[in-house]
Length: 538
Image 1 (cartoon, rainbow, N blue to C red):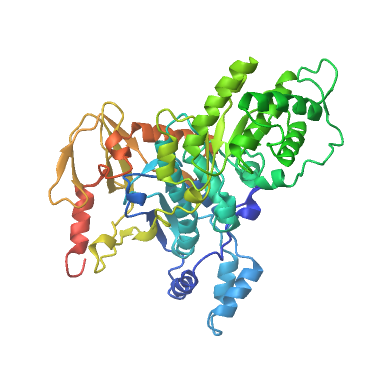
Image 2 (cartoon, rainbow, N blue to C red):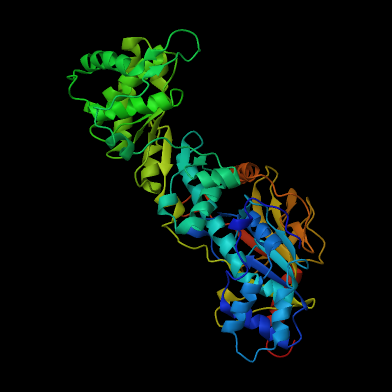
């Protein structure tokens, strides 16, 4: 597969980002003359994460990028030669040097689609040796991306549609790749943006950020701005000394709040002035470096009102400690009364942003009716997925040489479903999903308005369902190494995720004790499973 120029090529997973046993199996296949046997694998998960009833499919764009750049370099082959037996036939290493993904075909759920246990996220077919080597990288790329997207979707459901959610977890992420993945797929799952600049550059994720406490504490108040002059926002009129104007407003604000002018910290005020001079159209105050009531608020108001005289409007305040909900209520009340006192109505609606180790429980509190919080920054709880650190995806062989393969195992839960398959979502008249059906690829697709007899997984008896609509789930993205259609922009996949979740019934969207979604087998697939499970030669 020829790799086109890609600004993310350097970030793509490399072929040796794999487990050694993939390479030892590759040698075994090659030695047995099976390297080019046509084979098909499926990548899926067994249980929905976080005790929920749904997951979101994600990571496909990373998989496609990996396939397009897959090629073992000389240094890769030399290393493999150093860890394989010294008497390994040199012809095997020449075979590895020639490998690419030009014979690989991928069908997959579109990113942002609802995904359920046992339904393939990816179907990967091609030469046995190659598609075996792809197992670990594809699991790595899909599992974490889908987990992050699902976690973000849960947080969005808790927050509701009105609150702005920002991912701020890069510094808490499991390494740079984990950080980039988390920023990308938290956006797909429903967040509004990220603090991660690289995610903005490479993935088009909207980025946001202002200042930290270090910026505030870097100023003592004795600093003199090299140029304190600021022109009016409209561009008309003389420039004004913003620092001097702030001091005038400070007296008025402190008198209104019942504070002495010496109480607000001068270093904090100097930091706010410096930031306002740099970003007069995007000034935001971090209020809790010293004291929210006695310092952060009066300093912010003095700067915001001074900017307001010049036609600029502050864009927000942020809290990073204390009772965030209660403080937001008090701040909003002060903004309203101050707006009336000084006749500046824009001050009433300044957004209030909060952060500080926000988890699902605290998010529910901040999102409750009547909350004055507008923007919520979440870091650790979104990027580390503390409720479940892994989705537990697996990659299983289902067909070799056109013949179905099935893993029986001692644990019935780990049995696989044999054969090349198609997957369909059966929908009700209102467009809500009823159940997903897996069937053999050669079977005719289910028809809307017609009864269909299926076997729900785990059930002892079949059932009959009549869908109003039928949706084919697995789309052909890569055929014989060639991309069949452009991958949708990340924002489009994000919109699909929100639409898909809105169509899922409320009892299945419920985050605790949800109604589980059914996945069923066609009668023909069920019969094949029973035949292969029967003792004796097949």
